[in-house]
Length: 138
Image 1 (cartoon, one colour):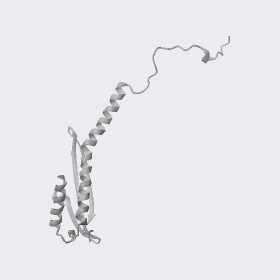
Image 2 (spheres, one colour):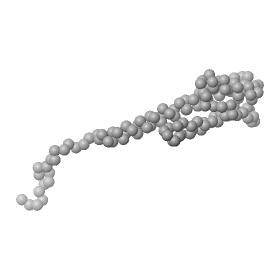
Image 3 (cartoon, one colour):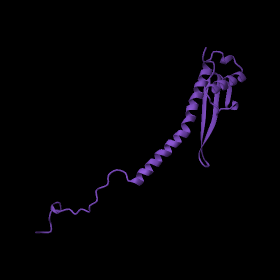
Image 4 (cartoon, one colour):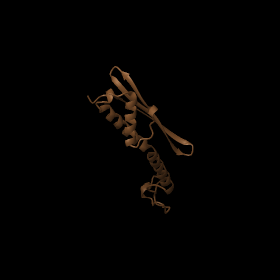
């Protein structure tokens, strides 16, 4: 026989170990902890975004009221705070609601910030801002 023997025809040596498939226990724990962290962040942050969409719908409802254009700034602010209280929105103070007059009409701007404690001294802050033109119900 020469040295150019076909290597595939030689018997294979096996060590008795099967080839690993899937995740090891450590990698499973790492993946699980990452997924749990993302879930925890979601549980902490999603309610603030749900509240923001409630704020936007309350602003739109006030803008579509036909009498909102005739209201004073104080009356509009009070009416908006009433709408927010009905929706159990407590993150917005009266000073977060601003009104201005432009060439296209009266604008209402709600601009506020929410901070949520994550763990220990780690905190996530979210800024929310929405603008509507008042008196659209005519």
